[in-house]
Length: 134
Image (cartoon, rainbow, N blue to C red; front, top):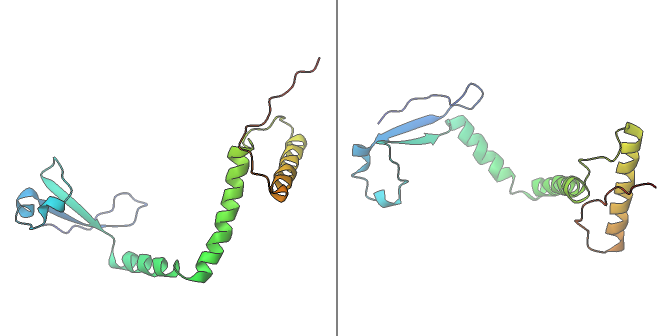
């Protein structure tokens, strides 16, 4: 069994990698629960102790009511952005000029607010196609 300390890329955090040959894995009493591989070597990666301690601390912090309240606001904002982008076609503008595109965004926001205030279910229909002028 080898314990090298490589990095998977220059920007990734270093990992402690344990390599087990197939011969070392055979005597393992719960071998049936291990992941199977066609290779003769199994790799198990562990973050360094400092990174693992940081992960444990952050995961514990995420269970606090204060963190969950802050994340609820973040989640609401992301949901609104997603609704505009996917439900109301805000990734595409009808006009190329910035003032008209801004006006489209403002009118769409007003329409979404009216929908929300009216209590009706939000529509997920795509925006209506442009009408041809005669």
